[in-house]
Structures are given as structure tokens and as C-alpha cells.
Length: 334
Ligand SMILES: [Mn+2]
Image (cartoon, rainbow, N blue to C red; front, side, top):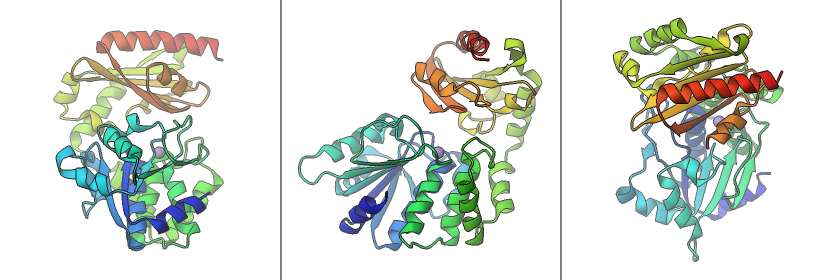
């Protein structure tokens, strides 16, 4: 499935890599690994994302290869790009954020426009790329990047191994989500062999929280609500509470799934108040109820067991409405 990608890479020189808004470690790790691989082939590579790297993830990019898109500064890079890799975002330009329109324009230029290659593992891809390698069976986009690099004989350097391992570690919820496969573990084994240290990387991701984040987790666990006959756990987090604990909305990794720790819970819902009267909705499930369908009704998306959306409205009202909806769904989906 890579021959066309290899052909394009060999023919072109200027390559741009981007990913979805609010990037996670699968997005960033995949970008950085692909960047190093392509650079090693002598290509000019730029990574440009709509959003900056969330503070807790900055350790991943010591050489500052990840750049945040600025229309004025980066237009020349976009104009030069011959290939645009869109990673972990098969939902199309909208998922890519602010930079999406500029890239879509570049791709459409009649003479010498850029070729768009999408690599992703999300289901329900949108038809926006010239070439799409979308494999919903992969546990992470990083599995596909691993494949792309190794099948061409590319080297798994220690840094590439660390980035891909971090991406897989986090996108599989530490090797426990449903798509964690034999192949996932085989890839992880190769990455460990090539220099990824599981304990060190785990600690970097999960054990470097500020005190406020850990205390906020305690607060959420202490106040979590249970409904739907014990099958739904939910929590609504206000801007005031976030401020009181000095935690940013982007630093709530792991919070949406806290409710799944309770026996009997099939769906966990976290609603986080955002500025300007919006609410960030995060859903997790044990797989028995496809929460991405629910998220899609709210113009969001994701996986059957992990999905989200951003909706307009008041925190309390949005949460109450969702709780009622999910309780009804749980009742009709045994
Ligand atoms: Mn991913």
C-alpha cells in the first residue's frame, strides 16, 4: 500500500507535514518520526500545525521541529510544498484547523499544486486527499508510520523509536484499548529493541503532572456522578474549577476515562466548560455502545470507545441533556 507514497516521495523535494487540532502524542509522534525519516532521505521537511504543542507534551520535541502555523510567516513554506502529509486526521481539512484552508488552496492550485497524502487510523475518512492510507484496524497512526518507514528499509533510530512508542502507548491507553493487537505488540517490541525505554517513556507521559492536575483528578473522582442504573458515570467541569486548580483544558488527558474505573459503568462522560459559551464533550465506553455515533450527532467524531465534540451551550444544560440521551441509549442498547 506504500508503493505510490514511496514513488511520490522519491520524485519530490519539499514536504509539509500537518495533523489535527489539539494534537495528541499519536499526532505529534507520528509527525516527528516521519519528519526525521524524510529528512534522512535528503528532503526539505516542515511540520506546521494549527495548534501549538500542549505544555505537558513539549518534552517530545527537544529540537523544536513542531511549528505553530502563522499565516504571515509560513505562507512561503506552503507555497513551496509539493507533498502535504496529513496525519491522524482523515476527517478532512476541518480537522486540521486554521491551516486547513491554506493547504486546501495549495492542493488545488491548477499548476503544480501539492499532492495530499493522508495517513490515519480513524474510521469514516473524508475524501479530501489525493492518496489516503487509512487503516481503521491500526491502533495508532504511528503503526502505519512504522510500516511506512520499515517497509522501505528506513532505519528505526532511537528517536524515531521513542516517538512511535509514545504514540502507540498513549493511543492504546497503555496497550489496553480494543484495537491493541498482536501487531501492536510486535511493533512495540521492535521499537523497544531499537531504543525505546518503556518505563522512562511511561513516566514522561503519565508521571510528570503538576500538583494541581493530580489534585483536580482527586476532585473529579470525589464528585463524579453515576446514572443509568450504574452504567453511566459523568462529570461536568467548570472554568472556575479549572482556574481554582490552575489546570488548562488541554491538560485533562486521562480525565474523560476516569469514570470507566467504576465496575458496571459502560459509558463515561466528561463535559468541560470552554470560553464563549461552549462545552467540550468527551466520551469513553467499554465498546458496548459506540460513542462516536453520539459524538457525530454533535458534529464531533472519534472511535467507538473514545470520542468527543465541542458544542455551543451552557455547561449544566448541555451535560443534563447528554446524560438523559445516554441513559436512554443505554437502556435501548443492552
Ligand atoms: Mn491516533
